[in-house]
Length: 57
Length: 482
Image 1: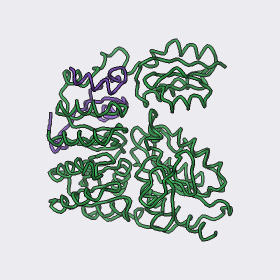
Image 2: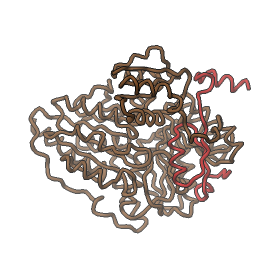
Image 3: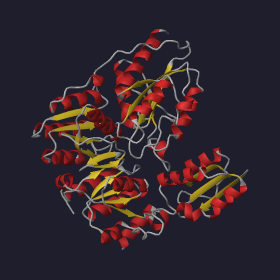
Image 4: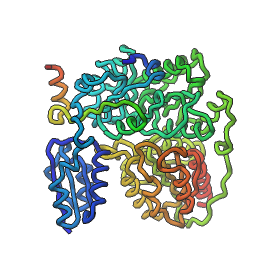
C-alpha cells in the first residue's frame, strides 16, 4: 500500500472496484490490476440499519 | 407479441451492467424491447411509459421487462440467471466485500460507484483500510463528504469525490476518460467534463497530462474548504512529472477561494487557474497552461468568427442547450451572462433563472442532464443517451426553439456512438451547434463523429466555449430582431 498520494502517482497503483463493473473492466483492459467486489446493498438495502449494525459489530 | 415482467427481490446489479444486459437481450431474434432496471419510482415511470406495470417492485428489486414473440420472451425469462450473471463464466466468485477483497490482494485505491445512500459507508471502510478513494457516486450528503475528507486528510489519504467523474492517476484513467498522452501538465479539478475537455485539448495541441486529480463538485465550497484540492496540489507539486499545475473548478466559495489563493501563492510550480462561472473558459486555461510548458496554442483554440446562421422563422426565438455534464452547462451560461442574455437552468449560475420544473424548458434553457434529478437509478447520459434523446424530441416539438446547443463527450464508458444516438432527430430549419470532446484514440472515433454531425448540417466546434459563443451570437441577433 502506497499511503502517500505522491507515491501512488509515481507507481503502478492496484485498484479495488466496488460498484459499476465497467470501471474495473476499463482499468483491467489498460493493464492495471483490479480486484472486483460483488457488491450488494447491506442490511436489505436500508442504509440506516446498516449504520446501526456497523456500530454494534 | 407478448409482454412479460420478471421481478427479482433484493437483487442489486449496477445500472451500466443492466443497460448492457438489456442491449444484449434486445439483439436476440424475436425480442422487440428489453429493459433491466432497479425498481425506483423513476424507472417504474419509464417502464409504465413503455406499457409495463410493475407496481410491486421496490428500489432494491430488479425488474426485467420484455416484449416480443412469445417463444423468444419465454426463453430469455427462463434463462434469466444466465443473462444476469456478472463476470467470466466458470471463474471463481468475486469477493463480496472490501474486507474480503483485501484478503486476496493488497491495494492502493478504491473506486466506489455504489448508490449514494451506501457510498459513504464503503468509502469510510476503504479509508480505514488505508486506501485512497475515487468516489463516483452522487447523492452523498455534504456532512458525509466533509467527515470523509477530514478523515482522509488525517490519514494522509485523499477522497476524490463524491460525484467525481474523472481522474488520471499514474497513467490509469478512472471514470470517464479519454485516450490522452502523458505530459508535463498536472490537473486538479472539481469538474469531470471540464477535466476531460481540458485534457483532450492539451492532447490535440501536442502536449499531455502528468496526472489529473478529481475532487468532486463541492470540494471548493466553503463547507468542504478545498480539502481534496489542496491535497491534490501538494501531490502535484511534489510530482517530478508535473511542470505546471492547472486548477479547474466550478464557482468556488469565497472562503475556499481565499484559502486556495494562499496555497497557490506559495506553490513552487507555475499554476493556471480556471474558475468556471466567471470570465474564464477552459480554452483560455488550456492556452495558458500550454504557454507555461513552451507550446504555442494551435489555431483551433484561438477565437474565431463564424458566418451567421440565417433562415430562422420569427417565432424561433429560444436557445435550448442539452448538456451531458454540469461544467459545460455552467460555462455556456457564463458566456451568455456576459452578453446580458438570461438563461433558465436546473443548475443555474449566479444571476441566472432557476428552472422550477426540470422537465419543462422556458425561454433560453440550458440543462445539465447529468444532474441527480436525471440520473438517479439510471446510467449517466454520457453512457446512455436515451434521456437526452427524449428531451431533444420534446424540445423539437416546441415551435419557439430556434437554436440547439449540444455537447458530445467521447471516451471510455461513454456511449459507443453518442452522435448516432440523436442524429436522426436533427432537423433542417433549425440552428444546431455542437462540440465534440475526444481524441483520435477514443474508440468512438473523433473524426467520424464530427463528420456525421457536419453532414447533418450541424455547426461543429472543437471546444464547448466556441459552440456556446456561436449560439450567443445567434441569440443576440434573434434578440435584435424582436
